Length: 234
Image (cartoon, rainbow, N blue to C red; front, side, top):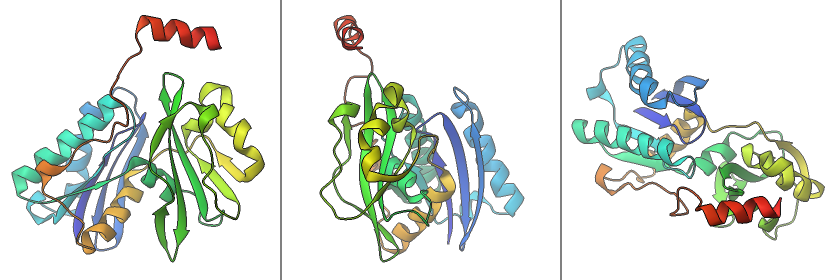
């Protein structure tokens, strides 16, 4: 199968092309350049592979949570291409993408955390079972000092910028239960593409118009009162 994937929910921008098990990816830390680079990168990957858009079977997208503008951009790009080609979309949680990219030789239990700004983190807990990633809890947006590991035997590894947020508070709190923490890890479209390909084969693709972003919270910015309260707690 042939699948094009977009992941723009963080400061990292990545686009990937999945071709019958092979993944071709472009990845770069490109703050504020996601809208400028996403489509040219996608077109470049298709040209290098000698693939026309019409040959794609589906479009994959990191649906968030993450930066509001980045999540909206990825959804808009993916929906536009999918609708234009009359192809389905395969939405995948950005936290799941992050967790799936965790080192395979680490613990099977993975806590993925993305800096949500405003004194909070997006978190998702997962476990590798039989070669698949299974969610152990619902995705949440929480203050770092409110995050708890799900009750499960065994050791954990942590990945994502949420472990560096708020001066590393989450890493400090959970380090006793973690074998390793990579606070610099970011979600990648190459990982997204492999997850989406498996989901597509399992019949989990959906019509493009049904895909919605996962924000986890409605407010984009703190009010002045909330900002003052946050500063007072620091």
